[in-house]
Image 1 (spheres, rainbow, N blue to C red):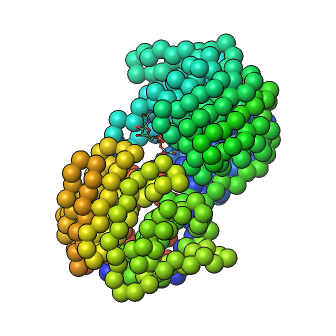
Image 2: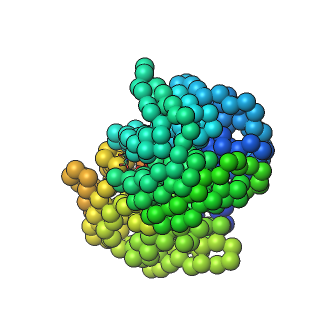
Length: 417
Ligand code: UD1
């Protein structure tokens, strides 16, 4: 198993590029199932979850070739079964359910695995698809779905769910008639998916608002589409500039999509400047201020940036509060940050972060994707050496992370244990 060994205490300076968004690429690649013509995807990040998706799609009948950030998908005869061996490693695999039902009227998908952050049910996906005419059975850990033909429906989600909105958006694109999704998630990745589907001939409007309307069409296909930049990777790099007291130009940083994060970083005392090439990030003064955050669905503060901003809070003057309202059990980085000298008190879904003068390097264990990023950030700022173990989580979501960070001055090496 690989670990990262980080010699901390070096201010990062220079230009750091942002890759294509993992969370946009996954649903957009799964939308291949809906297509009856070849599609080319560009700006696709080279990540483990992407390769898993490509293998899964190829097994389902959508032959995908990945090379240099481009995926070429050639549609073939579809199969309705997503095998457990692939699905168990990646929660997003459940996104093939809607498209398979729309194309084949049947789908067998193992219940998803992925990051261990709370219960993460898929009831909203299933309820929505049932309203469109599908029925489901659970058998030996598999969801088995069937329908004659999906028909448009009026669906109101109990809570805004990103994956649920994406699954239904894809299913509705080829359903008979109009579907209205209310209380839909508004994340920029959903807008990217809807824009992609529209480029393939879908009729979707309202993406980015909580009410999305989809007029079903009879076929989709044939386009070239560039995936949006990864707002969470970009936000992680903005924090890297602040936590190391360096200066980074984060290239292709999606400012608008990151607004909630940018506002909090500015309140913490960071200078963030929009330039034509990207966002220039550094501390405005010598110290960092405490802030309070509550994670919320977009446009609120993203849960996927909670662990990273907490690493920065560890070094702020005074006490910051973090409330995690999206996922229970998403504080697994806290005990590891404390091994590095952080002073954090946990109480249910809240964490109180008392700033300390300095973090010190320590052996730590990554527990999920964003927790891993938080430990890397802490390691970059810490005095001494940090060993981050179980970084396979990190490799699921950050393309070439140590190469990118080393290119701006970090001292990180990957070692095998
Ligand atoms: C996506 C992102 C993930 C991010 C999350 C929230 C991808 C591949 N993953 O995950 O990085 O952290 O959005 O921004 O894009 N819920 C239910 N029933 C459902 C579906 C969801 O109760 O059927 C609950 C979840 O347990 C959670 C909340 O709704 O508490 C939000 O989950 P959701 O938005 O669906 O997250 P994902 O799509 O899994």
